[in-house]
Picture 1 (cartoon, rainbow, N blue to C red):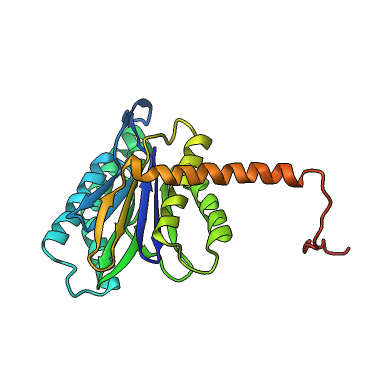
Picture 2: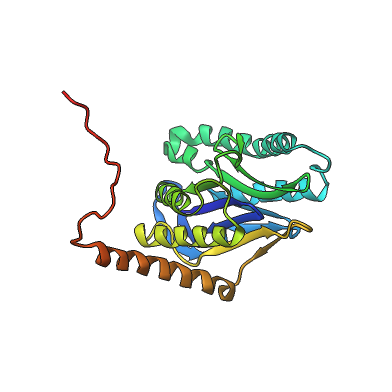
Amino acid sequence: MTLIIGMKCSNGIVMGADGAATYVTSVTQQTIRQPVKKLSIIDNKVIIGISGPLGMSEQFKAVLEKLWIEKAFSNKQTHEVMRILKENFYKQLEPEIKSARDFKDLIGHPALQNVLTQTLIGICVSKSHRLFIFDHQCSPEEAAGGICFYSVGIGQAIADPFLAFLRKIFWPDNLPAISDGIFAVLWTLKHAIETIPGNVADPKQIVVLENPKDWKARELTNEELYEHYQAINDAENSLKDFKKEVGGKGQETDIEIPQLPKK
């Protein structure tokens, strides 16, 4: 079970993941859970996180690493990089899908579920930071325009609304700075772990792609995350104090209240 989050910031990329890897049998019966790091850094330049079977994750990571080392993205535009990744990812996925179909009659739909993956990638293309998502069919999309975050995995249903709420409150009209992105991704992971225990779990992992002059990817230490945990604690306490402050008071300012349609 997994939750991986990617956020495009004005000055970099923030990616975060929970740390629970669940072992399952061939018929999806869960056996044990082990801590694992779900975000990988390639050549200190690229971040990849994959929701799905560990085997597919390792294959996709190897594909991306090979393409990066061979400089397959050099002098390429964003759409070309996305196409190259899609084609190479699907080459790995296609035989797995065929094999799953062959076994579907034997073990049922779990055979197909075991090849479903979603991938997030933080990367520099043409000297600019990009955040890509690849769906179950390896079809790509870039965080651009009004989109600044993606989440994948079982925790997506919890993470997306919470991230949308944070964006509405803190940066409705522009991209967050990377410090705000760390705060938002970490808070969302904390919220998801507390809300759906057993499916996503600690330890949390936060990785950033930063420093526009020479893009570098690195994992943040617990010491670096401490101030963000403190900020989350302060924000939650402020909301509690706000509830106490306004409890029982009448409205002092006019608020726009939606009107029900007349019959």
